Length: 121
Image (cartoon, rainbow, N blue to C red; front, side):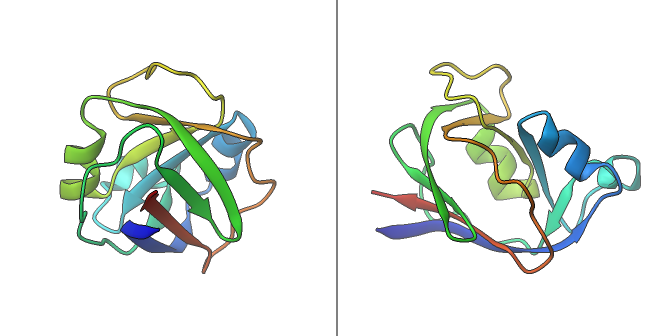
């Protein structure tokens, strides 16, 4: 598998884990505006090395998830801002343009230092 985008969590917003309990993970690079940082998992930014699409794999720490749907602006937002929302619901059409949907139960806990990688299969 070839990595398309690989980052490490640097900080967690005060309410980021609350969103995770609702089966969503909001990612934003360290350029996130102050008014949204509290809801995000903040990471160092990487260069997007290809297109994320259904059938690719998302890996969070040691857990892998199959990508089932990708919103229309995911690749643009990830490339420019490091910002997307990951939904752990296995939907096959994106709920919002900035959402990536994956199959599998959400991680119980995400901490600083955890690595997030999108792979092309």
